[in-house]
Image (cartoon, rainbow, N blue to C red; front, side, top):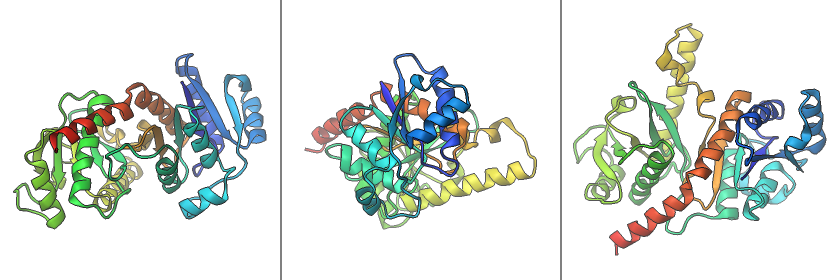
Length: 319
């Protein structure tokens, strides 16, 4: 397979991205080829400085950059030679099988929807995040910002998408799906969560265990935690902030170390017809390395195909 890497995206591009690519190239199977997408002269110069043979990679020239503060749709249209635009052209034409970037997450989402399209039956694609469990492994929190205004049927599909991801990438058998709420009782929460609960409680599409609360985020009682993107993004950034506080105060602990974003690299966009990985804007070389590995793992898990199959069964159950 061929994995496209946006060399120009992220706060520390291009050096961190190329550093991560060099590390990943040494570890991936020979059947995997990394395609570096960015300004060709800069890429070649860096590889030579690091005494790395440029022929170990494919290099695609893309001199423009979509900045974080640009409007995604407008930027993709006005910058066809940007690294993200070129990456999606390669993905659409199947010249690469996966595309990873630590650049504009908005542009990555818009590019995914309009180039490789959403899987038929998916209302809104979504992005998950890993939340380390106290006893090992991770919970999946979904959505974490893609859909701040979610309807009950969106939340239902987030449960389905999160369950398929947990089962096929994290290898969790029959993942337990909980709905994030302000209490465990069925009638708790706002109108959206109450309605979502009614959709989920009799489902055969995933293993719904009911409402879970904020205190359950790190426990081993659930595997997938569903919420709208507004709540999920606040939760995720609060967790990141607490981790930074512990680091600054010199508190070292094996469990706390698992909150380091470098361990995860990025997250896939769930519900689209290909493999697209979005990394943290502050990604360093280690995080980029992990992001490339994740692209390989998600592709090998045939996640998009598994989601399609689940949607077919979902349609049968609801007709």
